Image (cartoon, rainbow, N blue to C red; front, side):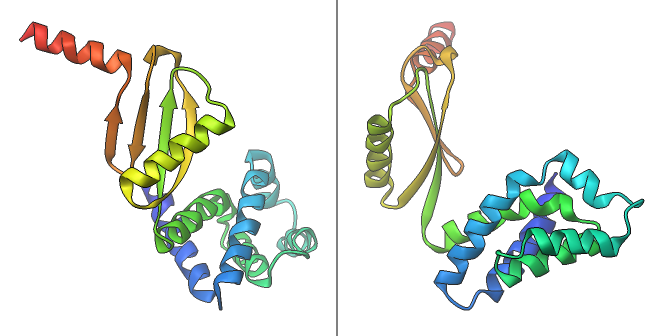
Length: 176
């Protein structure tokens, strides 16, 4: 997977360098975010099927992407020619990461014991932004094994304020 990530990142960097302005960057990102889930195993297998002539597959991609930015269409046609269409979801993720980094947005992964409603999620994001001094884009997950509290991962920094984590630390202290 690391090889896929580095190849995808190179394609994402090339695409970012083609963008003439921030508006185009936003369009590219929106297009890739919309296309990434479409490239599942079945779609990729269909587009890689050697029984279907390459010209026919290219025409199918061009027709399906007629409303997408020309750079996105060109990228997907290039990936099809090089038998790399399976990279589309990885390129979308890498492109989003590049844009976030360029805009100073930190990614956070928040895991809680119970689901949070929208207001609670917004509150967590605001607190993270205040604490980090950066704009934060957070994804949320639920893990009932945490018992209570939350873990927050921003980059390689992990904050564990869960009851499970506190109990484990207490056990380590008592054992030593």
